[in-house]
Amino acid sequence: MNPRIRELAKQALDYANSCEAEAWDGAYERKFAELIVKECIGVPYAMWDQAELNADVAVKIEHRIRDHFGMEQ
Image (cartoon, rainbow, N blue to C red; front, side):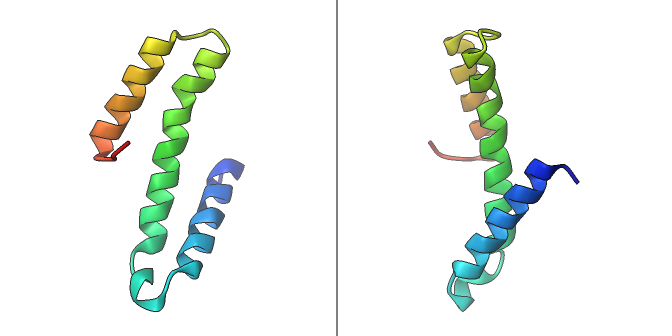
């Protein structure tokens, strides 16, 4: 498994373990998915930082990813 995926899985597990017992159900899966999507959103901004993409395109990609997964800003 990719080391970054392992780190995101650990963060999700830490989050789920910090939840109250009644809120734990599905907390790991939701947090893990959220972290992966946020990681994906970071890719176009990293490309922008390296002058591989302009800012307008990076923002459009972020919005498209958020819309695709139903995430709010």
